Structure formats: C-alpha cells, structure tokens
Amino acid sequence: MMRFSAEVETARKDGAPIVALESTIISHGLPRPMNREVAIEVEEIVRSNGAVPATIAIIDGVTCVGLAETDLERISNDREIVKASIRDLPVVAARGISAATTVAATSHIASAAGISVFATGGLGGVHRGARETWDESADLSALASIPILVVCAGAKSILDVPATLERLETLSVPIIGYRTNRFPGFYLADSGYPLEYRCDEAEEIAAIWKSRSDVGTINSGLVVAQPVTNEMDRTVHDSLLKEGLAAAESARISSKGVTPFLLEYFHTHSNGESMRVNVDIIKSNAALAATIAVEISK
Ligand code: PSU
Ligand code: MN
Image (cartoon, rainbow, N blue to C red; front, side):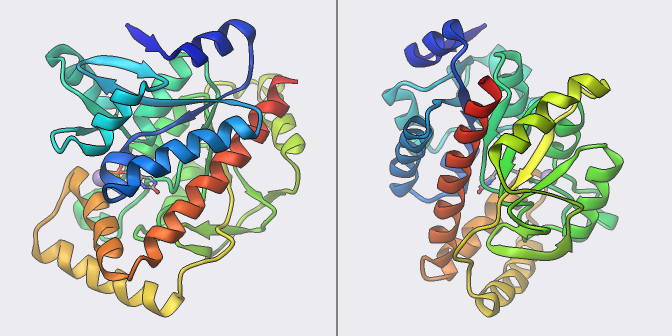
C-alpha cells in the first residue's frame, strides 16, 4: 500500500528521473521552523536539476512517496512523529501512525517504488563505543541488500568513521568519492580516511551503477560521497563532538535517540554553524543526485 504524489505518479509512468528524499532529517535532524523551509527548497533543487523529488514518509500508516503540503507540514511540526527505520515499518503501518523514515527505511521504500537514486545528508554507521554498545545503524545493512544509489556527505562525524568504512567493505557496498579521493566527514570535508574510487562526472557514476547488472551485483546499494564545500570550523567541531558525546553518555541516550541527540547538541551549541553546513550538504547532495538520476535515465 503506497500513495504517490501526482508528480511522482506521472514520472513513474513516463520513466522520468526521480530522486528519493528522506524525512528523518526533517523531523529529527533539523530544528523547526527551518526544517520545513529546507525540505521545500531541497525538493525545488531536485526539480531544477531535471528530476522529480519523492520525499518519503509514513502518514497515518500509509507509505507516502512524494508528500503533499499538509503531509510535509506534519513531518516538520508534529512532535509525535516517530523516527522509523526498516524494523519499525510493520508496527507503524498496522497502528496507522505517522513516521519519518531513516536512510534505511527510505531506501527500502524507494526501491519498492522503483526509485534507484536517493539524496541524504550523512549516512548512519558504527557509533563510537560500539565495541560495548553494539550501536551500528541499520543504514549499513540496508545498503548491503537494497539496490539504491545514495548520495551523501560521507558518514556523520559523530560516528566511528574507520569502523563504518570497514563495515561497508565487509557488506560489499561500493563507495565513490565525487571529485575527491577522501571519505568526506559530514560536517568536515575530509574524515581523514582515503577512498579507493573517485569519479569527477555524474556520467561515470551512472555507468558504474549500470554495470552492476553486468557483474551481477544488482541487489546491493552504492554510496556516492560528496564533500561539503565550506566545512565547519574544525576546532569548534572537535570540541562540540567531545562535549556532545559526554552529554549523551551522562543523559544515558541509547538506540535510535543517539543520532538526533548529537545532531541537536551540535545545532544548539555551534552558533548556527552545524545547521548551515547540514543544509549546504543536503542541498548539494540533492542537486548531484538529480544529475545522476538524469544520467541513469538516458
Ligand atoms: N543525515 C542528516 N541528518 C539526519 C540523518 C541523516 O543530515 O538526521 C538521519 C538519517 O535518517 C539516518 C539517521 O538514517 O540519521 C541515522 O540514524 P541511526 O544512527 O539511528 O541509524
Ligand atoms: Mn543506532
């Protein structure tokens, strides 16, 4: 059971390029009221780059691919909105509640709707301290088994980046640096870790995406990592990260609360810097995703 917006419905019929967008970044990743404005702008960026935006969320138990204005309004402002990863989907649907979807859940739904390109901010991954907590985002296992191309700014810098990269290797998820040989660090342009593959043009990325069928790896995802152009001040970043991690520990935040807690910590303590960077990231990723979707549809 899926509800498509009129523009997504038409694009599906015409085989026009579509870009999926997630909704957790709106409900749990950015503060009100700018979250809604950003979501609208991001959709507009996808359109101006030649593709149709499909923001994905669950509204009253119904999976929506492309949100109406009232739906977007609810995802942005309703404090009851749940953060849904893949495992939450059956519960949310059966109970008829409304939820925003993570990278994992958005990928799952987009793929089921026949959409293969998706733009987000930063991937979830292995959390720092995962040796004790076992906290690893379902985004990683989702990318191993869902045929989706995700454009992101690397993994969030709040994570254990080298462990996340190792897990992506184990899970056989390819990572392409867009105009970089370095794995981007979300708020930072360079996480400090290298990438094996770099592409400078969307056309090359589309060719790699298509060659998955030649080599028979069509059942897994692909990560395209684009660095932020104007990164956060590194000193501010590093001290906020240290403080935020300590605050999360003393507040005993766990499970799906960790990422939203840390992002909010950055947003309230960085004088608008982390917000600016997060918004820059999602906008440039939306533009690149649209360009890639156009290339794939050729
Ligand atoms: N990117 C952002 N902001 C966000 C997210 C990504 O710029 O809020 C969300 C995505 O929905 C991602 C989630 O899937 O954070 C990761 O949550 P967790 O670590 O609990 O899996
Ligand atoms: Mn987690």
